[in-house]
Length: 429
Image 1 (cartoon, rainbow, N blue to C red):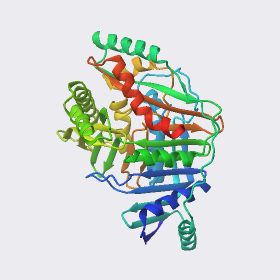
Image 2: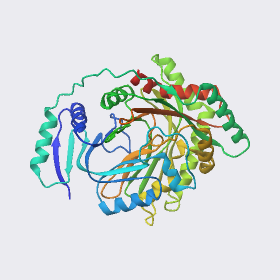
Image 3: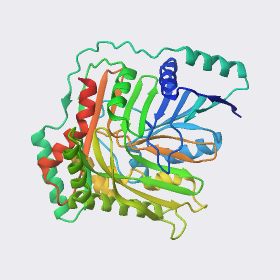
Image 4: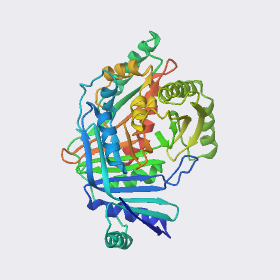
């Protein structure tokens, strides 16, 4: 049982910063930040979960079944992630690519302390019957000043795992597979990395969040493993029997000049290549959701909508379904994972080709971070536009990718990847 305490927060933005600062004393932290993006599917402005009471950490083998058992046993709030490597649990796949980060394939924890903020209303949910602890923590949080002492990090030498020349060659190989009919579309990614890197993860997250203001931003800490995420994309949300997926496919540059910026947005809206990318993945998501949906309930509620973020314009579609009650929420995750926007169509063929051409294990990149509620509802993002850091190994990594279709031009795909990498380079410079 959790004690529930409600508070009125007069300055929510300041309180968010104080919460994040306070969280640093804990070994396990998940901080979810919406950056005030609100739509029909929004729930909280920010969520903080800290301090594991129980946890689940595993490799990909039988991972979804382990997660289902953990979720059904605890019937509580759970926070954590699904890495891309769980594809090996879903299909007969494996990865022998380089992994410099060495994160577990799946990790979730049941937090002792949980904060849910919406507008001025704060809910505090603790796994304790001690009101004094709640009040003591709340007072300590409010007394914190939020002035990060910007440290001077050691020089970060960022390397590119695949050179531009090699990248262009690999895209040509991908196009050959498309022209042969093996796939229609595949998401190809490349890693940027730094060794012997020393950073202050919270400072880097704050900077990344400030220049991105993405709706599914995450600060994640599991002891010495960190994720600093500025994702604009929702993977999957469950509310009651309704399932919502919002894949992104289609990106264009932002401009300071209003006329040029509007032209960039219109170009994205009307670009045949970008629209075909998005529609193919929308069809893939419809098919994935139909595996656990009530008959006839899968709907595309928005197709190829264009939304503007600080760094880029993005094309987003929304697909919904109603869950057939013979299936659990974890089964919906298993039958849709990895998400279509980060794989391709047909999905299994695309994943095999991706594995052969990419040089790095994706790990948590292009996986998902989120939470379960005690009722079995959930909300997960797509881990993109993110910096991953293993503090013990001093290994830092971020990856970017783009969707390759028959209309792709290798040079333009490379430019799109560099556009997506811009925020991470800025944060780490």
